[in-house]
Picture 1 (cartoon, rainbow, N blue to C red):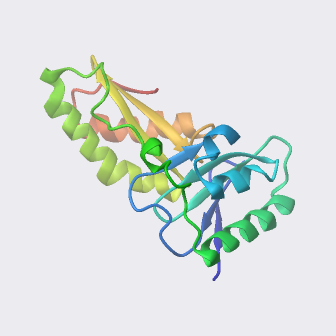
Picture 2: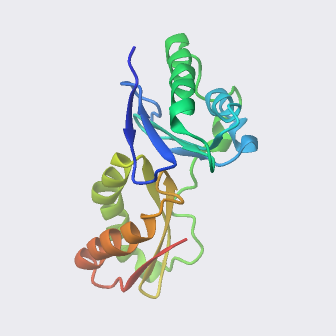
Length: 191
C-alpha cells in the first residue's frame, strides 16, 4: 500500500490519500482529542502531540499540525499510522459511536424560511455539485448553515478551516459562483 500526500492552501495542513475509500458518505472533522475519541484513527493521530485537527473525506484524510510543528518530522509518523490502520482494516469509528458522529442534516437550520425553499435548494445543489468537489481537492469541505435575507451562511471544514486563504475562497470564489447562479443571494458569510 502506498499513501500519497498533497499540500493544501493551508500550510499547517497536509492531505493524505490512501488510494481507497475513507468515508462511505459525508465527512467528519475532529478539532480536539475529546472529539477524536469517536475514532481510533483520529485518536491515534492526536496522540502524536503535534496534531490539532483531523478531517475524514471520501477518499482522503487531512491532518493539521499545531503551531511550530514541522511536517518533516510529523509526516512520516502520520503516514505510518495511516498505513497501520488501512493494512489492518481496523474500523474507522469506535463501536457504538457511529450514530453520534454524523454531520447535522442541512435541513435543520432554524433561520431558513419556508418561502425560501426553492432558493435554498438551488444553493444546496451548487454546494453539492460545484463547490464541495473543488473544496475537497484542497483537503476540506463546506457545509451549508443557513440562508436569511439574501445571506448564505457556510462553514469551512478540514484544511479549509483556519486556512489563511479561506476567507478569500469564501468571498471571491464561492460567493461569486453562488451569486451568479442564484441572483437572490447578496452575500456569503462564514458561519
